[in-house]
Image (cartoon, rainbow, N blue to C red):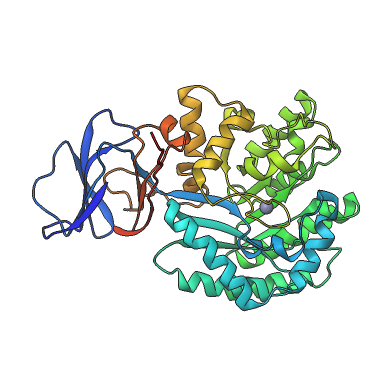
Length: 417
Ligand SMILES: [Zn+2]
């Protein structure tokens, strides 16, 4: 694909594009940050033209669950086991400075924008160890990437609520500084009663400020963990249906089938969304030294079948929790297929939607779609279909944000043949 400046009535013309819901090759016209026309051939010139060369054009990627504040921080503590993670993460966090968080987040966002991520819902630790330092660093990076990528910030009490009495006041302060959601981690508490207090306190803060909630639930393969059910119950009790997301929900996969169905029905009745984190959880869940059976991706298929909006995010990159990742949502979609057993064409499409249209629905972005009237937040791929995209062939991408080219990837290989 290539882009040339010219002059004309549209801001941007994408020529020879393929869309997921159309069989033919078409042109896409963009003006005022919107898609204004899609047709077999659109005449005239534009201020700028991108030749898609028959590649797919899709809505840009949205990551519904990522920890930007901790990104690229693994070097602070070296290689460790899961068991050591909490204590060592706390130690690392104490060393964070605003400038250091800002610099690491900027490096991650450069990758994200290049790969075609238009929006990230990022969890940011707000607790006694980092206080508001991590948040300030993320806010500075957000300012630097204004117009390139949108961030939704979740104030996340990683050190608990009962176990960290400073957390409630810090969460309220974070919501006044730029966080627009509150998070939670009830399983971190030491007793069921403390878990309930944790969930109740988060709902108190959310209802007081009128913000949605994005909980971490049951990041474990131990069946006794039931914080997803606890959150679903309280969502209905508080009348907060449609405003609550639960991430991970790994324990759901190890409940007996009948038990899992009962919890899924509650999640559906609470109109909750669920975010799976297949890349991180494939590595971190289960096995205890042996090959894991639980793949860490909750019960994505059963949740979808029940009508739950299930999204897929990347969670971490080179931090205490996960040592790999390169901010490519195609990896997330691909790993979703592998970890959840999505094999048919329709399921491959579903896995892709879990990184684009489903998180858009989670965030209330009705116009995030590659159709007339949709926002011009798009990715032009060199792959002509999703399977080739997931194969991640020496792929090229152009990322368009609000009708403007903001980043891209140029892939190439060479041999001596
Ligand atoms: Zn997380």
